Length: 240
Ligand code: HEC
Ligand code: HEC
Image 1: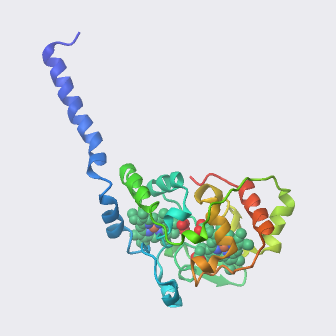
Image 2 (image 1 turned 120 degrees about the vertical axis):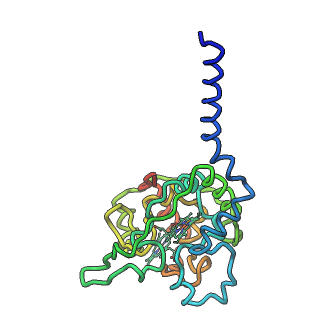
Image 3 (image 1 turned 45 degrees about the horizontal axis):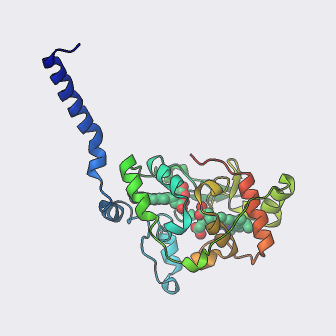
């Protein structure tokens, strides 16, 4: 049995310890999220929908990170909260304007590693409130109507050939960690990171999201997009 004095000192030690543990959680409140994002993220990410018709190619070239003003339509929140605490590269060439870090050679595009920077990481409490805040940002609701996507099996060899060769997606995207282009985001983690309705919408009309995207609008029909979705689902890897 503890003597009274010992018990007291034990309790006070524990209290001090518990306060230290709780402190990071207390320091960030939901209301702080907008301020945190404005001060620490807005230098590289757009947080308000721009007037698309006024966007210039210059704006695209000067972008330091992907836009976040439609985050609520784009990300799976669980992924977002985790990634903000442990960010890792999604676009092999860095995710800002590709020409900043890609050297074009006769053998294909090479990445200038010295131009790539580590992404800022957030504490758990911060990541939670920031992801809640980002998920509230919606800009183009008409582009992601409710989608009832039920994955179906595909014949892998054909589906891979369709993605890589017939649709030409691997010119810019990877469907395996070491295979494919470096200018677009990796797609073997797309189904883990992104909402299915966003993926369908982006494939069907990337220009509606971003007038100066590199990704071409191929006018694919619903069946072709569904085939690509099923392939992305089949190759899905957890992204963290
Ligand atoms: C110095 C510039 C910079 C700052 C500051 C910055 N980011 Fe980023 N962020 C980037 C770049 C570049 C990428 C693309 C990474 C990739 O594709 O590999 C990125 C990617 C992301 C992504 C994933 C985007 C996607 O769709 O693939 C999220 C979410 C994100 N940042 C949120 C934040 C938040 C929240 C903050 C502030 C706490 C922040 N970023 C601060 C440059 C920055
Ligand atoms: C010429 C290069 C290019 C081609 C070809 C291309 N894409 Fe993209 N794609 C991009 C880039 C770059 C982005 C990121 C947005 C941006 O910067 O414009 C993107 C974004 C995407 C996204 C959203 C992913 C994310 O993490 O934000 C999906 C899904 C996608 N592409 C699927 C495809 C599919 C499927 C094909 C083949 C039908 C394809 N893309 C062909 C360049 C390309």
